[in-house]
Image (tube, rainbow, N blue to C red):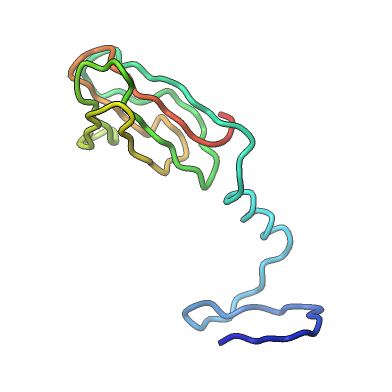
Length: 130
């Protein structure tokens, strides 16, 4: 249900969510917090991670701003596939230059890579300064 009005609202007591529940309205601080999470970031972090073995390895630690996803891309010059995942399994295969996966993590060290050839790489990119 919508309401069209040309009057001025002095104080909004609350809003009804999609389930019909009454909730307090977001104040200016809450609205700014939402804007900060969803808005454009000041800066870009990008680094290359090269494996040191053929075992699963955690990426270097970099804090990721809230609401930002990390792009893990296959790097040019790799000898074979790159497998990404968590500490237990790395089943997502990257097989070609520029192919990537996005992951919503709070730190890049939660992402693990495994390569059949030591020294193969991934390119990590996310918005915001690390």
